[in-house]
Image 1 (cartoon, rainbow, N blue to C red):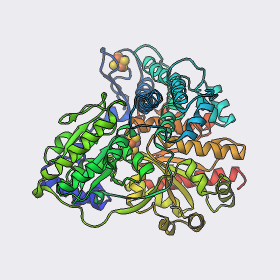
Image 2: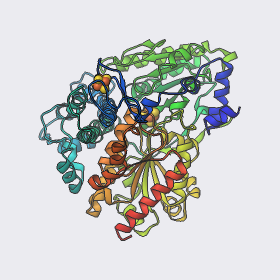
Image 3: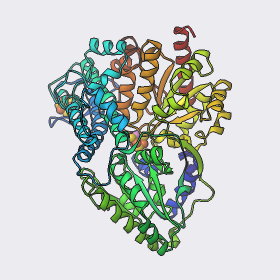
Image 4: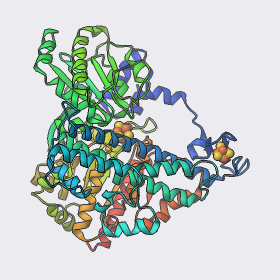
Length: 623
Ligand code: NFS
Ligand code: SF4
């Protein structure tokens, strides 16, 4: 019992951790415990297996070897390892973006039945940014032309990515001076893999600079494309009411859970679930309807655009299965624990993988392509409905109580329209001090940190101090579960922020989407900087990832800092084996980029660091 309390702050988490234990399941927390003690060399970033003369490790106490077989020292090994984490994270976001570009092209070519252009406005905006002529083009032809221009962003033709044009002038100069302006998206990742091969880049400083460039190719490239093309295909999010936690699963309905990241599959399932014939079939089977719920970021995508409720965040994915209520779980890619398939075997749940590049043990593989997506989605929803009658009553536990209410859908466009058409009122509120600053609290869960504790503690402190919080990803779900995403949560904010939220009818913690949607936060920051004629690093802003676990989060943190935003990490990254690198990232970057990293596992102390930063930035602006 005590153990369960120490693992999560959420009630549904505790209830279903106990249920999972009764059902004999192994969870992420059990496996984490079984891994103790974890490797100290790896924790410090001091182990290398980049070649077959190794593996090698550096003794952090200075007694054992200080160089690998090739001669690499601690600085080189830590920098190479960090570089490869960034490359993997950037590649993940960018490959997700590429999949959307493929759908956009197929829509234009008339080869993607069921998909369409939901936001012509955004398609035209992108066309003009990319220098694609709109003259006399049909929407379909324009979609193909924009898709082609975006495909080129992935390649090597350009000196700089097109979307660098969104970045304030001063920031672009900084990147040019440091030589970190991102070029082709794939090029930066590929070059990172090259540089970290044995015997290539052995200057830890130049490796880290390329790491920043690689991360920028994600933030102002791959992730940005993922978000913008999702808006074109599925619509720009607008404020929407919904609900969160395991109680969104309904005992009397067919429950289909969507887990993963890319809205390409989940949007088709959403459409199929509206089909009157399939709804009729559900009734025939004795269900009161077809209930969709999300997990992780594909859930966030559906929540933002369709108001689909969220069952939970990263550490809740196994526990969701232990309700015994999920008739089908569909996954695409990223953050889907390979343990899930086996866990589901304890219940009647059908587990279905959908992407040609992501297969899992004990899951059925039903591959989605733009051409077959509409029909396959219908088949799968039908099969989920048919599976409803196979629930195992002895293994079902309906979560007691009601879900928590929340609001989502705060795209930049939605925020600007809530403000009455421009960012002016937000700038005025920051100038007057009603809002002291804004912070993006983002990222994952990690069993090293009490589930949701980092997010909720930090964010509560920030809003109490009149700091507006914007969030994405699993952090956003944590905040929603804690009740911070309803307009009434303004009561928990300081007096200035409370008044602003009441006047606008918005919560003090604004849901901006999935993790690729972190680019929305930077779009907003760039717009504020433009409006004030300054650089992003001059604004009273910060970012935090209190419970991050993934390589994608490393890439996000690096493009945040390179974009001029001070970033506090809760989980320590594997860099502490090199004092040089720790000093560069936490101190010296400040002079180069106007922003740096901090590492602070205690979220209350992280809040203090951020508040101090915001005060200093306000003072420098004369506020
Ligand atoms: Ni982001 Fe989303 Fe969650 Fe972390 Fe994973 S789901 S893309 S990586 S764990 S926030
Ligand atoms: Fe060892 Fe160098 Fe090979 Fe790494 S690259 S495994 S440090 S020999």
